[in-house]
Length: 426
Image 1 (cartoon, rainbow, N blue to C red):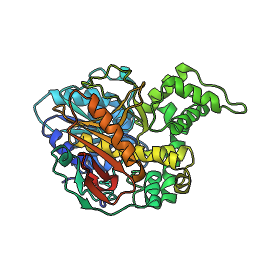
Image 2: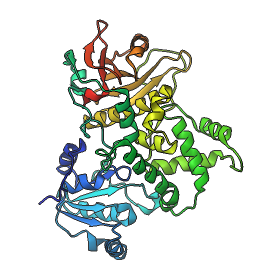
Image 3: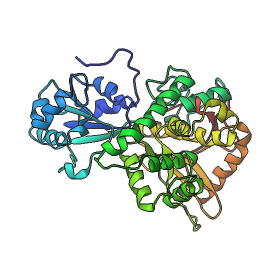
Image 4: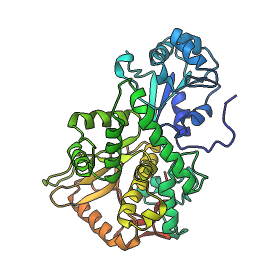
């Protein structure tokens, strides 16, 4: 009998979990704390071992540290929650998967990546790694799902009117974020969740991940720089300069090695995501940018770091545009991965031609997407997409403009779709 929690909201990753449990001996679900990994894993498990359970004084963790086999003998599929607390679990699960051809024996969940020297085998072929994120607007019920990414690729999208979302509601969705615990809260209450998340990262997680003591003040400076540069191509040098420019009082500048180490920590904690550059068969000889766009795993984290409220976003539409882009690209990444695709971006450094999002499916076909908060930027976005189209040796399967403030799904005479993010699904 599955251990599904009352009130569980189905996630897009559920289908992939079911499929992978039929193929692999074990799966490992990785992602940020509080994104819903445990509840989702329970939805597919018949038993569970909690390695970070304070209620029983970490009894199962202590048992695993003495002998991992003591916690790997429950009904299958067995969930091992926060397995990285005892890294030896990984090799033990891999070994047990090697002993027979039984599928779907273990589900591992983890909120951080342990140091590699504590794991001796990759688990390749035995343990399938899966990435989980916060909730998309479709998962939280804030997108009607009247348009699917799949149908855009198949040119099956029809013109229709949809509900228009007001600026205030969009601002609240950005600040609230996609944390399962926050989706039914007001923006004011949800902000407290995101702020407590950042406080926990600074007070505990940055040292607990590998036992190395790090400077809380410098990590906070880096987080602020990342938040100021959300949705931008911010190299390590740019981050260092941004921090130096904002150092005040007795603050100490940050070194290149520190930035590199701290970014690695944030990656291992699944707090930041790189949206890589798209380089597939573009004819242009111009200087094509190869640097990724940086995002927090959820836009609410950047808002929490900078103390951004919905009201502040509404009064600063430039910042709101960047965080709206982050919201859309969070959802596009989730939708893309749920259909076996990947999300990229494209930018030429010389001409400034760019495309906010490139969704590429497994067979190499792709769609090009521009993101604009207001419909008044529609023609600007369309011009950018057309310039990109002329450069592309292999033409995009579709081109689309995602607008925040829009009340219809339309296909323009030039073939470019326009739609609101609150109507999209995989």
